[in-house]
Amino acid sequence: MKRRKFLKKSLQTVPVLWTTPSILSSCKKEETSITKTVIVVGAGIAGLAAAQRLKNKGFTVSLLEAQEKVGGRLRSNRSLGIAFDEGASWIHGITKNPITDLAEQAGMKSFHTEDSSRKSYDVGGIVRSAATYDQIEDEFYDMLDTLMKKGNASQSFQTVFNAQYPTQAKDRLWKFFLSTYLTFDTGDLDKLSSLLYNEGEEFKGIEKIATNGYDTIANHLARGLNVQLNQRVTKIDYTGNKVQVTHNGQTSSADYVILTVPLGVLKKGVIQFAPNLPAAKLNAIQKIGMSCVNKFLLTWPTAFWDDVQYLSYTPETADKFNYFVNVNKFHPSSNALMTFAYAAYGRQTETMTDSEIKEAIMAHLKDMYGNSIPNPNPSNLLRTKWSSNENAYGAYSFTAIGTEMRHFEDLAEPLDDKLFFAGEHTEVDYFSTAHGAYLSGLREANNIIDLQ
Image (cartoon, rainbow, N blue to C red):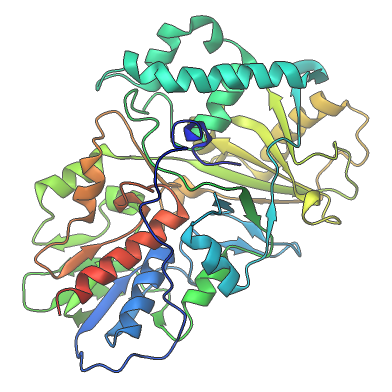
Protein backbone atom coordinates (compact mmCIF):
# COMPACT_ATOMS: atom_id res chain seq x y z
CA MET A 1 0.00 0.00 0.00
CA LYS A 2 2.52 2.54 -1.22
CA ARG A 3 1.70 6.18 -0.50
CA ARG A 4 2.16 8.30 -3.62
CA LYS A 5 3.44 5.20 -5.39
CA PHE A 6 3.24 7.00 -8.73
CA LEU A 7 6.25 9.12 -7.73
CA LYS A 8 8.51 6.10 -7.74
CA LYS A 9 10.00 6.74 -11.17
CA SER A 10 10.37 10.49 -10.90
CA LEU A 11 11.89 10.51 -7.42
CA GLN A 12 14.61 7.93 -7.87
CA THR A 13 17.20 10.67 -8.06
CA VAL A 14 15.73 13.02 -5.44
CA PRO A 15 17.99 13.24 -2.37
CA VAL A 16 16.54 12.70 1.08
CA LEU A 17 16.40 16.09 2.77
CA TRP A 18 16.12 14.88 6.34
CA THR A 19 18.41 12.70 8.37
CA THR A 20 16.84 10.31 10.81
CA PRO A 21 16.52 12.11 14.14
CA SER A 22 16.64 10.37 17.49
CA ILE A 23 14.95 12.10 20.40
CA LEU A 24 14.56 9.19 22.79
CA SER A 25 18.11 7.88 22.93
CA SER A 26 17.94 9.03 26.53
CA CYS A 27 14.87 9.83 28.57
CA LYS A 28 16.91 11.85 31.07
CA LYS A 29 16.53 15.60 31.14
CA GLU A 30 19.64 17.40 29.92
CA GLU A 31 21.45 19.63 32.40
CA THR A 32 20.16 23.11 31.68
CA SER A 33 18.98 26.31 33.31
CA ILE A 34 15.96 26.71 31.00
CA THR A 35 12.86 27.79 32.93
CA LYS A 36 10.52 28.28 29.98
CA THR A 37 7.16 26.53 29.81
CA VAL A 38 5.45 25.00 26.78
CA ILE A 39 1.92 23.76 26.23
CA VAL A 40 1.48 21.35 23.33
CA VAL A 41 -2.10 21.09 22.09
CA GLY A 42 -2.65 17.60 20.74
CA ALA A 43 -0.86 14.38 21.72
CA GLY A 44 -0.57 12.91 18.25
CA ILE A 45 2.80 11.98 16.84
CA ALA A 46 3.66 15.63 16.04
CA GLY A 47 2.84 16.86 19.52
CA LEU A 48 4.54 13.95 21.26
CA ALA A 49 7.72 14.35 19.20
CA ALA A 50 7.87 18.07 19.99
CA ALA A 51 7.17 17.53 23.68
CA GLN A 52 9.83 14.87 24.12
CA ARG A 53 12.48 16.95 22.42
CA LEU A 54 11.65 20.03 24.48
CA LYS A 55 11.45 18.07 27.73
CA ASN A 56 14.86 16.58 27.07
CA LYS A 57 16.21 20.10 26.55
CA GLY A 58 14.95 21.18 29.95
CA PHE A 59 11.66 22.89 29.15
CA THR A 60 8.63 22.34 31.35
CA VAL A 61 6.14 20.78 28.95
CA SER A 62 2.51 19.75 29.26
CA LEU A 63 0.23 18.30 26.61
CA LEU A 64 -3.51 18.82 26.29
CA GLU A 65 -5.20 15.97 24.42
CA ALA A 66 -8.91 15.95 23.57
CA GLN A 67 -9.15 12.17 23.28
CA GLU A 68 -9.08 9.52 25.98
CA LYS A 69 -5.59 8.33 24.99
CA VAL A 70 -2.51 9.58 23.19
CA GLY A 71 -1.84 9.04 19.50
CA GLY A 72 -4.22 11.29 17.59
CA ARG A 73 -4.72 9.61 14.24
CA LEU A 74 -2.41 6.82 15.41
CA ARG A 75 -5.25 4.78 16.90
CA SER A 76 -5.22 1.00 17.27
CA ASN A 77 -8.30 -1.06 18.14
CA ARG A 78 -7.47 -4.46 19.70
CA SER A 79 -11.01 -5.52 20.59
CA LEU A 80 -10.87 -8.50 18.21
CA GLY A 81 -7.54 -9.80 19.46
CA ILE A 82 -5.46 -8.21 16.69
CA ALA A 83 -4.46 -4.60 16.20
CA PHE A 84 -6.70 -2.75 13.75
CA ASP A 85 -5.02 0.55 12.97
CA GLU A 86 -7.77 3.05 12.39
CA GLY A 87 -5.38 5.69 11.07
CA ALA A 88 -1.74 5.22 10.09
CA SER A 89 -0.93 1.59 9.22
CA TRP A 90 2.17 1.54 7.01
CA ILE A 91 5.73 2.77 7.12
CA HIS A 92 5.88 4.21 3.63
CA GLY A 93 9.41 3.53 2.43
CA ILE A 94 11.65 2.29 5.25
CA THR A 95 14.99 3.63 3.95
CA LYS A 96 16.02 6.70 5.99
CA ASN A 97 12.41 7.14 7.08
CA PRO A 98 12.51 8.40 10.69
CA ILE A 99 9.57 6.17 11.56
CA THR A 100 11.69 3.07 10.81
CA ASP A 101 14.08 3.59 13.72
CA LEU A 102 11.35 4.99 15.92
CA ALA A 103 9.21 1.91 15.36
CA GLU A 104 12.10 -0.35 16.33
CA GLN A 105 12.74 1.66 19.51
CA ALA A 106 9.03 1.49 20.36
CA GLY A 107 8.77 -2.26 19.84
CA MET A 108 6.39 -1.90 16.92
CA LYS A 109 6.36 -5.10 14.91
CA SER A 110 5.85 -4.89 11.16
CA PHE A 111 5.42 -7.00 8.05
CA HIS A 112 6.58 -6.39 4.48
CA THR A 113 3.44 -6.12 2.39
CA GLU A 114 4.49 -7.24 -1.07
CA ASP A 115 2.68 -5.22 -3.77
CA SER A 116 3.19 -7.95 -6.36
CA SER A 117 1.27 -10.51 -4.27
CA ARG A 118 -2.13 -9.71 -5.69
CA LYS A 119 -5.13 -10.95 -7.64
CA SER A 120 -7.65 -8.83 -9.51
CA TYR A 121 -11.33 -9.54 -10.16
CA ASP A 122 -13.69 -7.80 -12.55
CA VAL A 123 -17.46 -7.79 -12.15
CA GLY A 124 -19.00 -11.22 -12.60
CA GLY A 125 -16.11 -12.86 -10.76
CA ILE A 126 -13.87 -12.74 -13.83
CA VAL A 127 -10.22 -13.08 -12.89
CA ARG A 128 -8.18 -10.42 -14.62
CA SER A 129 -4.86 -11.52 -16.10
CA ALA A 130 -1.70 -10.26 -14.44
CA ALA A 131 -0.46 -9.07 -17.83
CA THR A 132 -3.53 -6.87 -18.33
CA TYR A 133 -3.25 -5.48 -14.81
CA ASP A 134 0.46 -4.70 -15.25
CA GLN A 135 -0.06 -3.07 -18.64
CA ILE A 136 -2.78 -0.72 -17.44
CA GLU A 137 -0.78 0.05 -14.31
CA ASP A 138 2.17 1.16 -16.46
CA GLU A 139 -0.12 3.25 -18.65
CA PHE A 140 -1.61 4.78 -15.52
CA TYR A 141 1.80 5.87 -14.23
CA ASP A 142 2.71 7.26 -17.64
CA MET A 143 -0.47 9.33 -17.56
CA LEU A 144 0.38 10.67 -14.11
CA ASP A 145 3.81 11.72 -15.33
CA THR A 146 2.32 14.03 -17.94
CA LEU A 147 -1.25 15.06 -17.08
CA MET A 148 -0.15 18.16 -15.14
CA LYS A 149 1.06 19.61 -18.46
CA LYS A 150 -2.59 19.78 -19.50
CA GLY A 151 -3.82 21.04 -16.14
CA ASN A 152 -4.47 24.53 -14.84
CA ALA A 153 -5.02 26.15 -11.47
CA SER A 154 -8.81 26.29 -11.75
CA GLN A 155 -9.51 22.74 -12.91
CA SER A 156 -9.61 19.51 -10.96
CA PHE A 157 -7.68 16.39 -11.82
CA GLN A 158 -10.96 14.67 -12.66
CA THR A 159 -12.01 17.36 -15.14
CA VAL A 160 -8.68 17.30 -16.97
CA PHE A 161 -8.38 13.51 -16.92
CA ASN A 162 -11.91 12.97 -18.25
CA ALA A 163 -11.25 15.42 -21.09
CA GLN A 164 -7.89 13.88 -22.03
CA TYR A 165 -8.77 10.22 -21.44
CA PRO A 166 -12.53 9.83 -22.03
CA THR A 167 -12.31 6.10 -22.79
CA GLN A 168 -10.16 5.32 -19.77
CA ALA A 169 -12.46 7.37 -17.55
CA LYS A 170 -15.19 4.77 -18.17
CA ASP A 171 -12.93 1.72 -17.83
CA ARG A 172 -13.36 -0.17 -14.56
CA LEU A 173 -9.69 -1.06 -14.12
CA TRP A 174 -8.67 2.53 -14.78
CA LYS A 175 -11.25 3.67 -12.23
CA PHE A 176 -9.72 1.24 -9.75
CA PHE A 177 -6.23 2.70 -10.22
CA LEU A 178 -7.57 6.23 -9.97
CA SER A 179 -9.28 5.28 -6.72
CA THR A 180 -6.70 3.15 -4.91
CA TYR A 181 -3.50 4.64 -6.31
CA LEU A 182 -4.52 8.30 -6.40
CA THR A 183 -7.66 9.15 -4.40
CA PHE A 184 -6.38 7.04 -1.50
CA ASP A 185 -3.06 8.88 -1.42
CA THR A 186 -4.40 12.37 -2.11
CA GLY A 187 -8.11 13.25 -1.99
CA ASP A 188 -11.33 13.66 -3.95
CA LEU A 189 -10.46 13.75 -7.66
CA ASP A 190 -13.10 16.38 -8.35
CA LYS A 191 -11.31 18.62 -5.83
CA LEU A 192 -7.70 17.52 -6.41
CA SER A 193 -5.48 20.06 -8.18
CA SER A 194 -4.69 19.12 -11.77
CA LEU A 195 -1.30 20.81 -11.33
CA LEU A 196 -0.14 19.62 -7.89
CA TYR A 197 -1.49 16.08 -7.61
CA ASN A 198 2.02 14.60 -7.61
CA GLU A 199 3.67 17.02 -5.16
CA GLY A 200 5.45 15.66 -2.12
CA GLU A 201 8.47 13.46 -1.62
CA GLU A 202 8.77 9.86 -0.56
CA PHE A 203 11.34 7.67 1.12
CA LYS A 204 12.77 4.72 -0.75
CA GLY A 205 12.54 1.12 0.32
CA ILE A 206 9.85 -1.45 0.91
CA GLU A 207 6.48 -0.85 2.55
CA LYS A 208 5.85 -2.31 6.00
CA ILE A 209 2.54 -2.56 7.82
CA ALA A 210 2.34 -2.43 11.62
CA THR A 211 1.18 -5.75 13.05
CA ASN A 212 0.96 -5.04 16.78
CA GLY A 213 -0.39 -1.51 16.48
CA TYR A 214 0.98 1.80 15.20
CA ASP A 215 0.03 3.30 18.54
CA THR A 216 3.07 1.59 20.07
CA ILE A 217 4.99 4.56 18.66
CA ALA A 218 2.69 7.06 20.35
CA ASN A 219 2.87 5.20 23.67
CA HIS A 220 6.65 5.11 23.40
CA LEU A 221 6.91 8.83 22.71
CA ALA A 222 4.53 9.60 25.58
CA ARG A 223 6.75 8.03 28.22
CA GLY A 224 7.59 10.48 30.98
CA LEU A 225 5.47 13.28 29.54
CA ASN A 226 2.82 15.27 31.38
CA VAL A 227 -0.23 14.46 29.26
CA GLN A 228 -3.67 15.66 30.31
CA LEU A 229 -6.34 13.60 28.53
CA ASN A 230 -9.93 14.53 27.67
CA GLN A 231 -8.97 18.20 27.48
CA ARG A 232 -10.70 20.01 24.63
CA VAL A 233 -9.09 23.34 23.76
CA THR A 234 -11.53 26.08 22.75
CA LYS A 235 -9.43 29.25 22.78
CA ILE A 236 -5.81 30.34 22.43
CA ASP A 237 -4.97 33.92 23.38
CA TYR A 238 -1.47 35.01 22.41
CA THR A 239 -1.86 38.75 23.00
CA GLY A 240 0.12 38.91 26.24
CA ASN A 241 3.61 37.92 27.34
CA LYS A 242 2.36 34.41 27.98
CA VAL A 243 -0.04 32.41 25.86
CA GLN A 244 -3.37 31.60 27.49
CA VAL A 245 -5.03 28.31 26.54
CA THR A 246 -8.65 27.66 27.47
CA HIS A 247 -9.56 24.00 27.85
CA ASN A 248 -12.57 22.40 29.55
CA GLY A 249 -13.57 25.78 30.97
CA GLN A 250 -10.23 26.49 32.62
CA THR A 251 -7.21 28.47 31.46
CA SER A 252 -3.56 27.43 31.45
CA SER A 253 -0.64 29.64 30.44
CA ALA A 254 2.83 29.07 29.03
CA ASP A 255 5.67 30.92 27.39
CA TYR A 256 5.09 28.98 24.18
CA VAL A 257 2.27 26.94 22.68
CA ILE A 258 2.57 24.39 19.86
CA LEU A 259 -0.76 23.68 18.15
CA THR A 260 -0.84 20.27 16.45
CA VAL A 261 -4.56 19.68 15.86
CA PRO A 262 -5.47 18.26 12.41
CA LEU A 263 -6.27 20.53 9.49
CA GLY A 264 -9.90 19.39 9.61
CA VAL A 265 -10.23 20.79 13.13
CA LEU A 266 -8.77 24.11 11.98
CA LYS A 267 -11.22 24.16 9.08
CA LYS A 268 -14.15 23.70 11.48
CA GLY A 269 -13.09 26.80 13.41
CA VAL A 270 -13.76 25.18 16.78
CA ILE A 271 -10.75 26.92 18.35
CA GLN A 272 -10.98 30.68 18.85
CA PHE A 273 -7.80 32.73 18.48
CA ALA A 274 -7.01 36.12 19.99
CA PRO A 275 -5.94 37.95 18.00
CA ASN A 276 -7.46 36.27 14.97
CA LEU A 277 -5.14 34.22 12.82
CA PRO A 278 -3.52 36.27 10.04
CA ALA A 279 -5.06 36.26 6.59
CA ALA A 280 -2.30 34.11 5.07
CA LYS A 281 -2.87 31.33 7.58
CA LEU A 282 -6.66 31.50 7.27
CA ASN A 283 -6.33 31.34 3.50
CA ALA A 284 -4.08 28.28 3.73
CA ILE A 285 -6.55 26.55 6.05
CA GLN A 286 -9.28 27.12 3.50
CA LYS A 287 -7.30 26.26 0.36
CA ILE A 288 -5.61 23.00 1.37
CA GLY A 289 -7.92 20.00 1.08
CA MET A 290 -8.76 17.43 3.76
CA SER A 291 -9.41 13.93 2.48
CA CYS A 292 -11.65 11.13 3.64
CA VAL A 293 -10.38 7.55 3.90
CA ASN A 294 -12.35 5.09 5.99
CA LYS A 295 -11.14 1.61 6.91
CA PHE A 296 -13.09 -1.55 7.66
CA LEU A 297 -11.91 -4.79 9.26
CA LEU A 298 -14.08 -7.89 8.94
CA THR A 299 -13.57 -11.40 10.30
CA TRP A 300 -15.17 -14.76 9.44
CA PRO A 301 -15.11 -18.23 11.01
CA THR A 302 -13.02 -19.42 8.06
CA ALA A 303 -11.12 -17.76 5.23
CA PHE A 304 -12.52 -18.21 1.72
CA TRP A 305 -10.35 -15.85 -0.31
CA ASP A 306 -7.13 -16.23 -2.30
CA ASP A 307 -3.84 -16.64 -0.46
CA VAL A 308 -2.35 -13.37 -1.74
CA GLN A 309 -1.57 -10.08 0.00
CA TYR A 310 -3.93 -7.84 -1.97
CA LEU A 311 -7.25 -8.51 -3.64
CA SER A 312 -8.77 -5.98 -6.00
CA TYR A 313 -12.29 -5.73 -7.36
CA THR A 314 -13.35 -3.31 -10.07
CA PRO A 315 -16.98 -2.24 -9.61
CA GLU A 316 -18.68 0.55 -11.52
CA THR A 317 -18.96 2.71 -8.39
CA ALA A 318 -15.71 4.50 -7.64
CA ASP A 319 -13.99 4.37 -4.27
CA LYS A 320 -16.26 1.63 -2.93
CA PHE A 321 -14.70 -1.41 -1.22
CA ASN A 322 -12.47 -2.15 -4.22
CA TYR A 323 -9.27 -3.12 -2.41
CA PHE A 324 -8.79 -5.81 0.24
CA VAL A 325 -5.76 -6.46 2.44
CA ASN A 326 -5.46 -10.12 3.40
CA VAL A 327 -4.75 -9.78 7.12
CA ASN A 328 -4.11 -13.54 7.32
CA LYS A 329 -0.72 -12.88 5.75
CA PHE A 330 0.53 -11.32 9.00
CA HIS A 331 -2.10 -12.66 11.45
CA PRO A 332 -2.54 -16.22 10.11
CA SER A 333 -5.46 -17.25 12.31
CA SER A 334 -7.41 -14.02 12.13
CA ASN A 335 -9.57 -14.89 9.10
CA ALA A 336 -9.74 -11.17 8.45
CA LEU A 337 -9.86 -8.78 5.52
CA MET A 338 -9.36 -5.03 5.63
CA THR A 339 -10.99 -2.83 3.02
CA PHE A 340 -11.48 0.88 2.35
CA ALA A 341 -13.84 3.58 1.17
CA TYR A 342 -12.62 6.92 -0.11
CA ALA A 343 -13.80 10.44 -0.87
CA ALA A 344 -17.56 10.93 -1.38
CA TYR A 345 -18.36 7.26 -0.92
CA GLY A 346 -16.17 7.18 2.17
CA ARG A 347 -18.26 9.99 3.66
CA GLN A 348 -21.44 8.17 2.64
CA THR A 349 -20.39 5.12 4.67
CA GLU A 350 -20.48 7.27 7.79
CA THR A 351 -24.27 7.48 7.42
CA MET A 352 -24.65 3.71 6.91
CA THR A 353 -25.38 1.13 9.59
CA ASP A 354 -23.04 -1.77 10.28
CA SER A 355 -25.53 -4.10 8.57
CA GLU A 356 -25.56 -1.91 5.46
CA ILE A 357 -21.75 -1.83 5.41
CA LYS A 358 -21.51 -5.62 5.67
CA GLU A 359 -24.11 -6.08 2.94
CA ALA A 360 -22.25 -3.72 0.55
CA ILE A 361 -18.91 -5.40 1.16
CA MET A 362 -20.34 -8.90 0.86
CA ALA A 363 -21.99 -7.97 -2.45
CA HIS A 364 -18.52 -7.47 -3.89
CA LEU A 365 -17.02 -10.57 -2.27
CA LYS A 366 -19.91 -12.71 -3.44
CA ASP A 367 -19.46 -11.43 -6.96
CA MET A 368 -15.78 -12.33 -6.72
CA TYR A 369 -16.17 -15.78 -5.13
CA GLY A 370 -19.76 -16.80 -5.82
CA ASN A 371 -22.74 -17.22 -3.55
CA SER A 372 -21.43 -20.50 -2.13
CA ILE A 373 -19.04 -18.75 0.28
CA PRO A 374 -19.05 -20.75 3.55
CA ASN A 375 -20.28 -18.66 6.49
CA PRO A 376 -20.84 -15.61 4.29
CA ASN A 377 -21.92 -13.33 7.13
CA PRO A 378 -18.93 -11.63 8.78
CA SER A 379 -18.56 -12.44 12.45
CA ASN A 380 -17.23 -9.00 13.32
CA LEU A 381 -16.87 -5.54 11.83
CA LEU A 382 -14.65 -2.66 12.95
CA ARG A 383 -14.89 0.65 11.12
CA THR A 384 -13.82 4.29 11.12
CA LYS A 385 -15.73 7.53 10.57
CA TRP A 386 -12.92 10.03 10.10
CA SER A 387 -14.85 12.83 8.40
CA SER A 388 -17.36 13.13 11.24
CA ASN A 389 -14.80 12.45 13.96
CA GLU A 390 -14.67 15.68 15.99
CA ASN A 391 -10.98 15.11 16.73
CA ALA A 392 -9.96 15.06 13.07
CA TYR A 393 -12.77 15.89 10.61
CA GLY A 394 -10.92 13.99 7.87
CA ALA A 395 -7.98 11.72 7.20
CA TYR A 396 -5.13 13.92 5.97
CA SER A 397 -4.36 16.98 3.87
CA PHE A 398 -4.06 17.08 0.08
CA THR A 399 -3.42 19.59 -2.70
CA ALA A 400 -6.89 20.76 -3.68
CA ILE A 401 -7.85 23.19 -6.45
CA GLY A 402 -6.46 26.54 -5.34
CA THR A 403 -3.77 25.04 -3.15
CA GLU A 404 -0.29 26.46 -3.56
CA MET A 405 2.69 24.71 -1.99
CA ARG A 406 3.47 27.85 0.00
CA HIS A 407 0.20 27.29 1.85
CA PHE A 408 1.78 24.39 3.76
CA GLU A 409 4.59 26.74 4.78
CA ASP A 410 2.04 29.41 5.74
CA LEU A 411 0.41 26.90 8.07
CA ALA A 412 3.79 26.24 9.67
CA GLU A 413 4.65 29.91 10.21
CA PRO A 414 4.96 30.78 13.95
CA LEU A 415 3.10 33.79 15.34
CA ASP A 416 4.93 36.33 17.51
CA ASP A 417 7.52 33.68 18.46
CA LYS A 418 4.91 32.37 20.90
CA LEU A 419 2.38 30.30 18.98
CA PHE A 420 3.79 27.50 16.84
CA PHE A 421 2.11 25.07 14.45
CA ALA A 422 2.89 21.43 13.69
CA GLY A 423 1.15 18.46 12.08
CA GLU A 424 1.31 16.73 8.71
CA HIS A 425 -0.49 19.67 7.08
CA THR A 426 2.43 21.95 7.97
CA GLU A 427 5.12 19.78 6.35
CA VAL A 428 5.51 20.85 2.72
CA ASP A 429 7.69 17.90 1.68
CA TYR A 430 5.92 15.08 3.54
CA PHE A 431 2.36 16.29 4.08
CA SER A 432 -0.35 13.67 4.62
CA THR A 433 2.03 11.17 6.24
CA ALA A 434 2.86 10.04 9.77
CA HIS A 435 6.55 10.72 9.15
CA GLY A 436 5.67 14.21 7.97
CA ALA A 437 3.78 14.85 11.20
CA TYR A 438 6.68 13.51 13.26
CA LEU A 439 9.22 15.69 11.46
CA SER A 440 7.00 18.74 11.89
CA GLY A 441 6.96 18.25 15.65
CA LEU A 442 10.75 18.12 15.78
CA ARG A 443 10.91 21.20 13.55
CA GLU A 444 8.79 23.31 15.87
CA ALA A 445 10.59 22.09 18.98
CA ASN A 446 13.86 23.15 17.35
CA ASN A 447 12.35 26.54 16.51
CA ILE A 448 11.59 27.12 20.19
CA ILE A 449 15.01 25.84 21.24
CA ASP A 450 16.66 28.24 18.83
CA LEU A 451 14.96 31.18 20.57
CA GLN A 452 16.83 30.55 23.82
